[in-house]
Length: 361
Image (cartoon, rainbow, N blue to C red; front, side):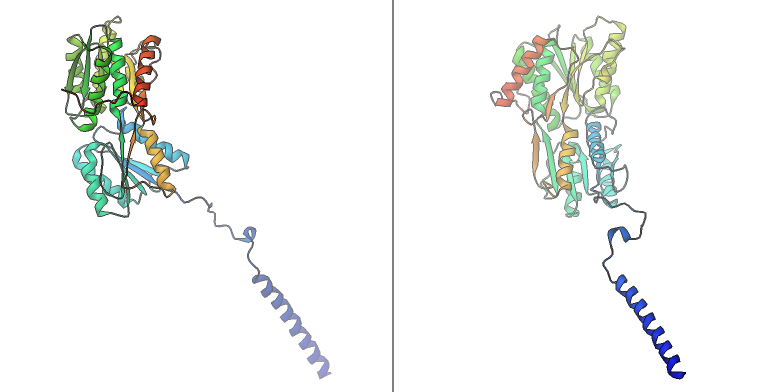
């Protein structure tokens, strides 16, 4: 009887051991992907975040800063990012003293690539980049000789040359104007190209030139435009950021008062056709000299994301690189004038014409 009980107990122990052994063998098998517990998270490519600091013109200047911000947003959309930390963002500068704190604020938020927009930000970018050698920066419209900064320049003089050709050919009075912002090299390139292009097609053209000293004073732009138009100027090219909005305001007011008035504005950096809209049938924007800031931002951001950040280099975009060009005039420029513009464009691209970067005295 005792032997039978012992046999039953032994059988039970062996059976239990077999069950436990089977369970243990199952637990030791490699976990299949479908057997993993759900965490509620989705696996995706690690994001590469970018941000920018505007100059004093503001992100909605309808010009340079806005074009850069459009590039930042386009990059974000391309990679499924959201506005904010870990995605894309901007900080606006109301004064030059905002540059340093804004750049440092974006650094603390761990953005992978930070853009400084404008020549005036060069010193701040250089100093902060030197203090943070592992961070990546991009400087638009100026050069920084630092290994972790890529400098982005444009041959504004080439696009402005075509704007000068258009202005001189379209002027009825033989008087055209240039309204600049701050007297700095980038604006000098706009100025020089415009003068060279206008004089190429009309050596006797009269060109009035005024640097306002600001990129964010529309009221000063309006006063300047008023003075020029009142003296007989009929086409004004502005390279003044948000100050140029005042040039448009003055031209539109004059066109409303006198629908037959020959007053035109050539916009800058972005297509400013909407800025010149007087009504559904009338617009004072002749064309705009486009600067591919948005395209450059997307291009360099993708390079950096792919581990190809061109730190320490200066990248320059001109007519040949499609970095500058004139916007569609929507019929304001007739075909015969457009043919002349296209002819000069080809001469610049081929190297037959080298456009000066400074006004020739």
